[in-house]
Image 1 (cartoon, rainbow, N blue to C red):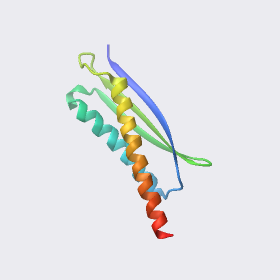
Image 2 (cartoon, rainbow, N blue to C red):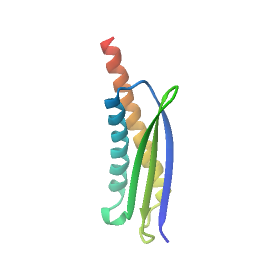
Image 3 (cartoon, rainbow, N blue to C red):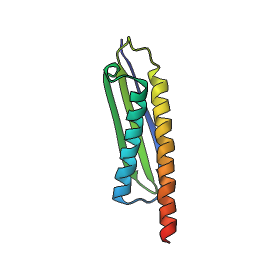
Amino acid sequence: MESEGRRVVHIGLPELTEEQIIEVGELAQKVVIKHVFDALNRSDVKDIEVTTRINRGETLDLELEVYLEVPVFVKVDVEKLIDEAVEKAYATVEKKLREIANEGQDKA
């Protein structure tokens, strides 16, 4: 039996340029992957997929989806690891958004 988990988190975003949107999405992906590989060896990960989507409506939403599969002999709580990775990504993205907002205020 294999362990796997999936999480989706919605984060409201302010107006951003296309470059900033891409940067935020890539940042979230990098943080999740780094957290997983800080906790596990590469050989312990059977499959990992981190997807970010930007949905534009009345607000911009960043959707972060994480899929992680490890062999059954790897003793790790996959759900907890994904939760921690997503929380870390959320905190990092939030910090980045504050930096972007502050840069915008400096220009005004």
